[in-house]
Length: 221
Ligand SMILES: C[S@@+](CC[C@H](N)C(=O)[O-])C[C@H]1O[C@@H](n2cnc3c(N)ncnc32)[C@H](O)[C@@H]1O
Ligand SMILES: Nc1nc2[nH]cc(C(=O)O)c2c(=O)[nH]1
Ligand code: SF4
Ligand SMILES: [Mg+2]
Image 1 (tube, rainbow, N blue to C red):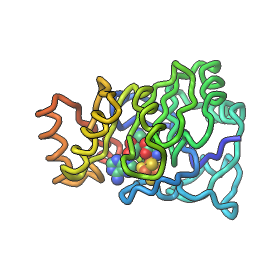
Image 2 (image 1 turned 60 degrees about the vertical axis):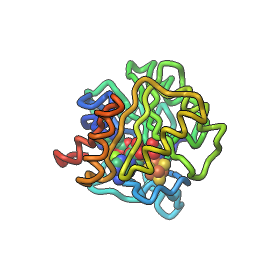
Image 3 (image 1 turned 135 degrees about the vertical axis):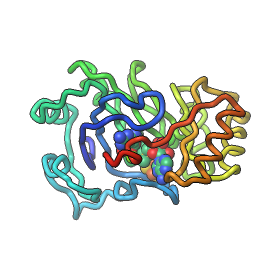
């Protein structure tokens, strides 16, 4: 069973897959506690807010409501809803709190590609074909060993930044782990002008890439 906060079809707004029609499966639960997190409604798994899977899909705004669903029930839901996107983004919350192998395999068998968005604070349990986006949560709850293996598995790094300290921490992480992935994106925190300028200047200097959260600029989910 997976704990589902919401399922919706939209355009991927972040990093390499920006612009790709995607179905987002947002899982409930995250113990990491980033101060600037834009999905705090996913942090707690509160039994009071357990609802049906349909209710999580019909949400009109962010809420702590969540539902239990099997991989098969999720594929069935995508069929019933008539979604046309073929790319599934599994996010959260922290999706790697759960073993995502069977969910991704079931989605692959049904003809979808998969991508996981993770903080790297839990072991990443996904098939080889799954695209893994790691937003390493440095000096946060979670193990250093796990973060190293997450860096090794990462297909891309997407690092939220607001101040120089965040860039210095990322450089230190590359040095500590000996892993420097090819695709490194800086993502300004919460569209702040100062954060955006810092991200642009640093990307130009280091030949990294910029990820703005496109969906937030155009006002979609
Ligand atoms: C909400 S998280 C869920 C997945 C996972 N827990 C993680 O942190 O990667 C999805 C992405 O949004 C980023 N993010 C969260 N809040 C943000 C904010 N206020 N501004 C920019 N990026 C943010 C995260 O770093 C991560 O890359
Ligand atoms: N359009 C859109 N793109 C996204 N990319 C990552 C998201 C996330 O919340 O993980 C997200 C999201 O919430 N919406
Ligand atoms: S790890 Fe991801 S979901 Fe959890 S608090 Fe940080 S940004 Fe939010
Ligand atoms: Mg989001």
